[in-house]
Image (tube, rainbow, N blue to C red; front, side, top):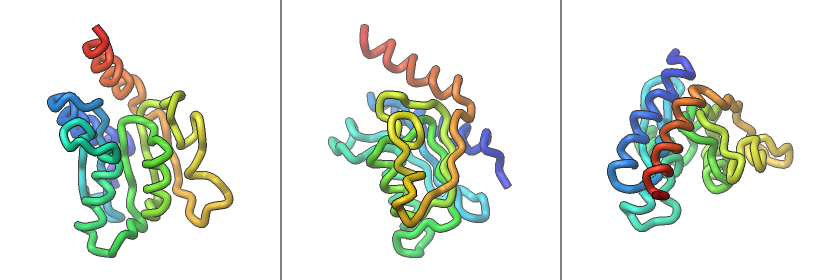
Length: 152
């Protein structure tokens, strides 16, 4: 099975595509139960003019299509460079993702333990395993570099 570090590295590679289009460089990769990549995506809100075009949402959609089991991603792992927001956390819970692995914590909008903890809310019927802070410095540096260049 692929390591959590390797999963986040794959998400970092996906994130680089977003920076080229002016989007915030966040990348997400969905790994199937067998550890193979089902889908990878980068933020595309600017490119698509779509407020829901977060890397996680795009990767979940593509993975569900590829897996062919309807909308369920049972046994899958979502790796992402930054802690998911409330929309993305809700989507991964509804998709029945088994595990979430992310890089940088997001204290302003994070919904997987920082500001909120949507994915571990006991009122929900599905609660994925969460591993945060994987390659945190590398993931945070990518975001810091992006914002430093866009706030000049």
